[in-house]
Length: 221
Image (cartoon, rainbow, N blue to C red; front, side, top):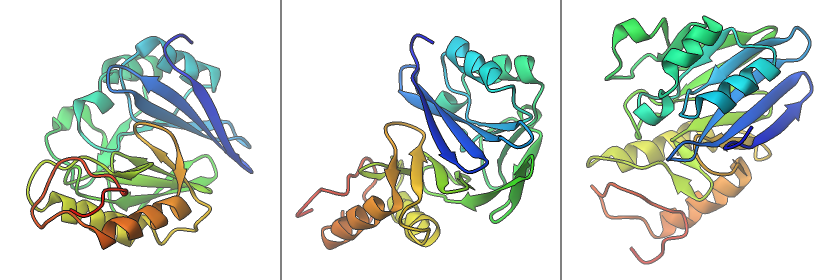
């Protein structure tokens, strides 16, 4: 699969296949499978149709698609994925800027999505976008553009940085420290590492109203 790497995170009957980086923004997509009944769910639809569809086929197909947020780089293969799988596409209940005809359902905070016998928990984590969501799957959490290795996702308006940091602190950092964090771009990290980085940032935070890119290691700001 030229142009995309394949990594596997396994936890009992839960198999998570990372496909990426893909496209000009280095996006990751994830296929979550229940190995016991061979059911699958796809998280995000970034560019590079061939590698993504090849991975879906190699994993036995998917029955559901979840988009972590509306930004176009996470939707670029929507038409190809829908044509290949026929799977419904679900987004967060508070997400904006998505034509309603492109989605089949909305997911509330705390709601569970079934993948065979697995139950994935939806976490509403606004800040990067109003309706950004993360998905807990076994010993992992797929974080879209909310939390990366090294910091939070990009923010675009005053107040958004405070919002995304509150999402991370309230919804993600309380997870078990051994939880694998699987982001929408870049390499994986853990909740333990994220707690340490968040604590360092809190000692030297950006000023109120700042928005843009932030890393945990920034000092004296």
